[in-house]
Length: 149
Image (cartoon, rainbow, N blue to C red; front, side):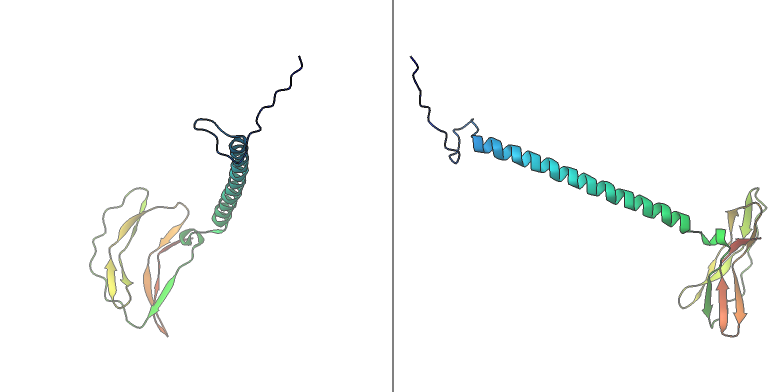
């Protein structure tokens, strides 16, 4: 009784009845998942590489950067308008661990503006050179305050 049964071949292009998945749907979902995993892995790889590059950039920028105060460099601004006389400014009593930076006139595009004195943390082994204006042959030059020896 070897009877051969003929089962109908599924139509892979025909949508499956409600609640059932066709073979084509299962295969395409599997391929999509595999493709999605590959894309996810590629994106993670790119993200990791970009994060590494960003970290290396930050580290190398930090290694090259030297703040103005640490380097002992001053910035000069030159104008043809002399600063006014400084107003009287009472210097407060000394504070341990701090240095008094006296007030100064700052140039703001078209006029001088007074900046009041303030306390700055002391740096052992350094001397604070306060901000000042200096007259030169080509006008007045402003020098920011800085730490030096």
